Image 1 (spheres, rainbow, N blue to C red):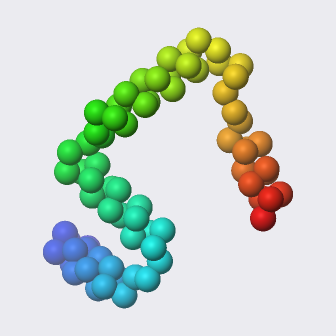
Image 2: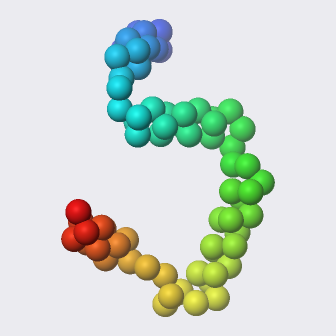
Length: 73
């Protein structure tokens, strides 16, 4: 599939899309593509990386978090 065909296919799909979560994710991807992370996001990531490096044992396990979320549903 050439790039123009892909674009047209995505445009058609996007015009019918009703899922707010997917639309928000697409918008976030667009913002990343346009300019990268904001200074606030970079600072937050730096803070979290420093926190992890200071105490890696304090990090939460993704699988455990997902189990807790699923349990609450």
